[in-house]
Each structure stands twice: as structure tokens, then as C-alpha cells.
Length: 304
Image 1: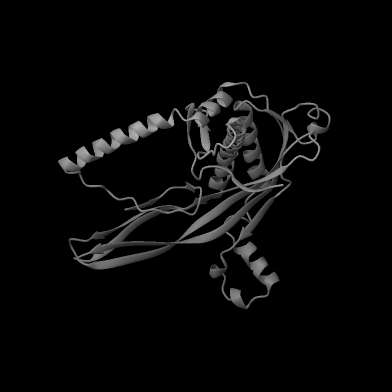
Image 2: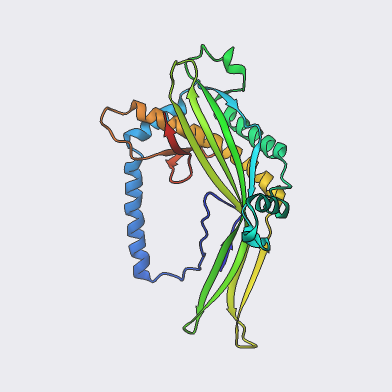
């Protein structure tokens, strides 16, 4: 069975398979492995950087943010394969055809995307303990505060395209394939972060991208009546309302990413000289848990 849910950080699609029951010896081996992993987790909980991270979480970090929203949303359609004679068109005609034939981007409202995103972002930033001001306030209010930062959402971009999906399975030494095109919309954001009132402060460029796409569930099966292999599937097509929901979801998500950025900066600053920090931490405010962040974080593009 292949199941694809609505949101993904990257264009990552995986098959889900039912795992058969384990033999007794294998279960015992897995139990020993779990005991070892538990011991490793216990050691991990004592890591010095984790203790420093907990200090940041438990202390009243008076960080003030001036949030500068984007003026518009950049929107592009990349479904050229769906336009007849696309390759023979001029660039101007291609752009016009892509826009007029788009299923999503021509109908998506910039104001709804930005309203959903910014309201969710600001609410979560404040819930995480930040003092938040909107653009323009930092000139008169924030210049004298030592921990004040300008957080600028420099660009929000939506990209519509087809994601080619191929499913496969084998029956009696024969491999069967089925191909689909799923509707997908990438939601990408670029951010500038810099300290206010510190002269020539460094600017950090941050980035994040997520994807919303058709929900898909399909599988091959052997039809006992005809003796042939058939394919059964359902597709829940992506809707414009799903893109608006993604904007709200990512506003909260990116606020958490920013909290994690300051958290890990604090850890790096308070570790002993020469100590190499190996773990980038994520703090879940709702569950009050601290855990390593893998790909679920801002990508740091540049610091200058």
C-alpha cells in the first residue's frame, strides 16, 4: 500500500508496508537493542549542551522582535507539460499560458495567504515568550533594548507543479508499475535576521520550504475472479483551502524554528571554548520536550 499525506517538508514519498510478526529470537534481540538505545538516551539526557538548552528554556529570555512582513506573494506555475505546444512558444507566451492554465496560483489570494501566515506566526512567537512588534516600531521603541532583532520575511513564494509518482509491486515474479501525476504546491520562505542597535550587526539569511500535495492511497491486488493483477487507488485532490491551511500551519512552524535558532545560538555561546556542538535542538512548546532536530528546522543560507 502506498499512502501520501497532505503536507511534507520536502518532496519525500515513501511506501508503507505491513511488517510480519517477529520470531521469538528476533523479538529478544530487539528487546536487547531497545535496552541499549534507552541507555544511550539516558546518556544523551546528561549532555552538557542539553543542560544549557534547558537553562534557556526555563529562564525568561527577554528577546524583542520587530517583524517585517512581505509585501506580496510570488506565484509560479511549472506545469508546462500540460500546455499543448508549450516548447514552441516564446517566453512571454509560455508565462501567459502557464498562468492562465494554473489550477491554483492564479486563484490564490495573496492577502489570505499572508493574513493566515502572519497571524499564526505572531501568535506563536508571543506564546513562545518573545516580545513582538510590527514593522516601523523598532526605530522608536526597540533601539535601546539590548536583545532586539529585526525579523524580516523577505520573500514568500508558491510554486505549482506535477509530482510524478510511480508505484510498483511484484506478483509471481512479475513486477507491475503504475504512474500518476500528483498536484503539488511548494511554500518557500526566505528570512533576514539581524540585531538592532548594535552598529554593523551581522545579518543571517534563513530559508524553509514545505509542500502540500494530493493525498494518495493505492495498491496492486490480484483479482481472484479474473486472475489478473489490478490497481486500486483513491486521490483526494489538493484544494486552494489546503494552501491557505498550509500558510497558517507554517506560520506556527516557522515561529518554532526561530525559537530553536535562538535556543541553539544560546547553547553555542555558553558552551566551553573548543567544545564542538553536535546536536541542533528542537523545543516542543506544547509537549514541553527537548529533542534533536534533523531536517525540521531553518536552513542557514548565509551570515554576513
